[in-house]
Image (cartoon, rainbow, N blue to C red; front, side):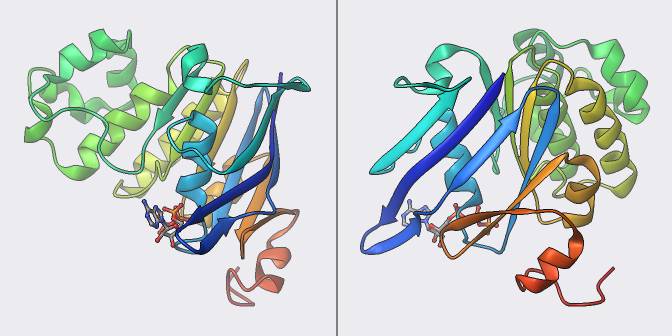
Length: 219
Ligand SMILES: Nc1ncnc2c1ncn2[C@@H]1O[C@H](COP(=O)(O)OP(=O)(O)OP(=O)(O)O)[C@@H](O)[C@H]1O
């Protein structure tokens, strides 16, 4: 399965945010999206999911134009940049709702064992991010969108998530964005940089330096 998005025109008021976008994401692969603050990464993921309507867009799955929002097709899961789960929900109920395996989660995140009966509001922001990211990555959906999964979480958990992503990508299209660009470079098979409304495929870190996304010699 191949997911493609292009011909996007997204404006807020008189300001055009996205207009020269082409992105192709393949099943079994991880596609990373990088870019400075405000370049439109979250907007692009929302357009793909279907909860932000640009003036124009073309989304294709295996070359076929998709008219309905992808979320209506029930084949997509989306981790938003901000809170996903309601505050009053209990952690074990969240696992039931998402059909997620608590024991498998604990094998990866042992210290979370004590939180099974907690409410979402009782978790730290980083703990909540770990939980939400896990629930979305492991969903049995063809397309997984992750908006800043590594923000707020400890380096050891980022490493764990990179392993989980590598395992979960089989049979799935995973698209993710984050400012932890080294982690994105490491976990992604294909990288796009968003800049000035355009997307550009990046092959090596030097390209990020040429585009002014990172300083030279930041390796
Ligand atoms: N509802 C809105 N109304 C007006 N402007 C908006 C709205 N949503 C987003 N924008 C603007 O669109 C631009 C892109 O926003 P977006 O959230 O997609 O950026 P981003 O690349 O995800 O940024 P960050 O890395 O800081 O999260 C920003 O400049 C933002 O101010």
